[in-house]
Picture 1: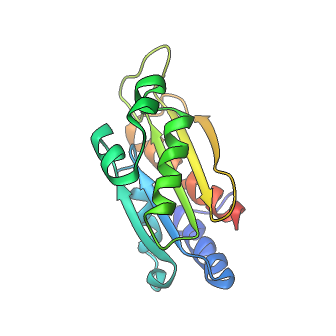
Picture 2 (picture 1 turned 180 degrees about the vertical axis):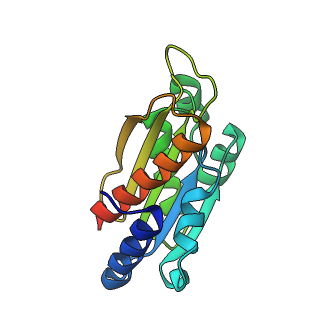
Length: 160
């Protein structure tokens, strides 16, 4: 998509409103920026239900019900955890659609989990959770986070 983040958020809200959908977010590496982009748009309160900022593993477990076994087996930056985050956000909200993100914005990373790797989870009421990993590369912390927000909004728009 070529839209700005604000443009994406407007499209998302229009589509969600038209379909009677409600949205929740579960964010780690973006620290609430997806929720912030959505709620920046006036009138978003009739579509956006809530956001969970679960930066620590303990928060992922306590707030979203992510399994400690999943965290131990796969690590926080994994599709398995992103999927559980999305499912947990959906289950713990009044939303019909939830997006989750967990990644390595940088600086740093490792050979196994490089800077710029972000895992996404998408949960829709009555459907199986979908996950994906995007390698944004070492763009720098702010750019990885911005790209993650844009991609998350695109995923939500596509889901609607």
